[in-house]
Length: 175
Image 1 (cartoon, one colour):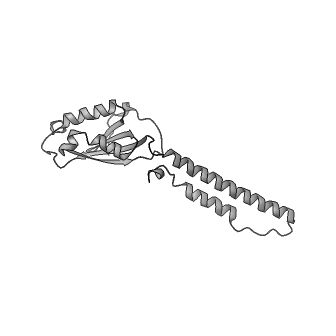
Image 2: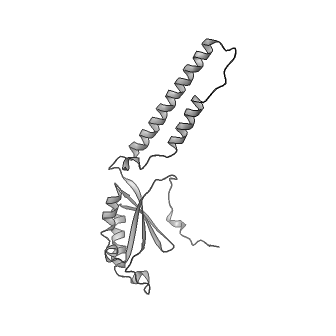
Image 3: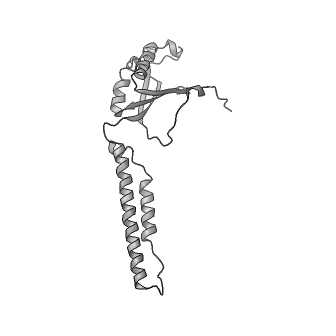
């Protein structure tokens, strides 16, 4: 199933639309010579063939991008676990210092490309070959093992590539 992880959903409707345009009903051409009509049919068949070739090439390129073993991006959401003590600050929680040390090691090893917080949720972006690889790395976190924190891994499909500037951490005024 991982082969289809990078499949672009818009390939199918575009291909179908092109086929409808190419093969849709056309008004008969009264007074058009047979030679012109034959050429029109050949042009239509050629366009249909090229459309199918381009659609197939697009699908194959998408599938090739998702080859097993290729490095991919995964979002990891970290939330409070069942053993989180609501009476304590985050830095006072069980295994929190070890959690920070584990994340630092994963970042230094190149597994984590960015991290952020929103509301009471932590967000990490991992580079890995599979979700199982990310789970294996996150399972080494002592805070996860202790139940202080819990996590969920989600495969990412980037549609707006870009760069996150850590200097953009100024507080935002919310209404």
